[in-house]
Image (tube, rainbow, N blue to C red; front, side, top):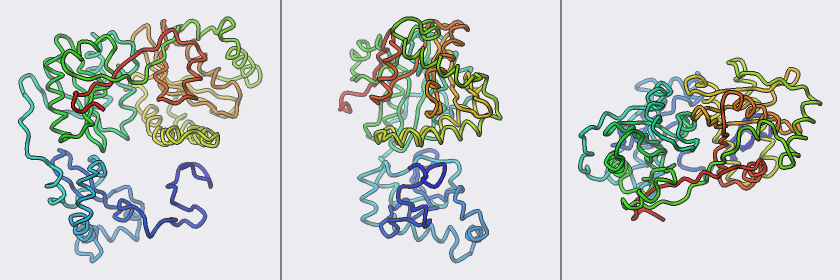
Length: 438
């Protein structure tokens, strides 16, 4: 939750006035065992216990000694005591009934020991191997794969904003992305605590059915029966074909598509209120709209934190509040990987204050997608002004259409997007196997 004593976020059970936990005696298991963490191994074949190298105590003078071998309270000795608790009832039953409590593998958590009993109740016997003909190795997806990703996207004509690398890799703090190739198709996978899914269908030329079937087999094996197995962002034009193959498709929140010239000019009665807001803001504040630079990173992150607090104080619904907390990492990633992800970043200055920033990308030469936008909510008209300036620049650079992604099911955001009069709502679907469809 937003820190009432300053910027940033706090655990809701933490009392900043006393620096103590309000529920210490009944705190959750994760808190009790910290800095240890229960997670899957890198190959997802074992449950392991590791210590979090980000823990401040373990890095200061008081905790550094606990890293020494032979210390009676060393992290290894503590891990043995914790492992005895984790591998006995009723904790075993809790993990068996709720496997999503086990975290995904993290590079900055050092594995201390395996948890064989916990592994045994969660890991099924080996399944038949994924068909290997034409298949490559599983690789971690990074911004360095941008060129290969763009090559795979070239045959795709979908106007969905998801068909680009940026809207996925900005979420690398929440998901682990990987990819492999089957039959010239690039298959992208996203992994989180609940399992593995495909954020996009297989990408590439030629028949799709075989690489899709292979990708599904891979996900089923990794997920061990979990119903998390799915493929997201299936275009509407593929719906009937996929259903004929036996998959079930349910609607996903649609993207909003606009005429770029209309948003750049804001002419006529439909845009009267937005035009007035822009003109009033420009007259009052004389803003500067300029490219994002590395030196803008920290002021932009400070702005995000203030903006999130502003939104939370307006009593946003719980889902939106959680999204605000999760999104900070995505905004930070966009700033750090701007060029590698093919992003266009812009900031707005009023006097000496950075008051807004926006990031977007060209999905194609004629389609620009607005990925992220933050504007100081205390400045009336600023949000409308920075959005218009972004659309103006995109239109001048050749954009015919503007895609602002979906509304995440948030009614306030949906109202705002509808007020700009989209020319089309781009339908897309989530595909599951029939027996896992709910």
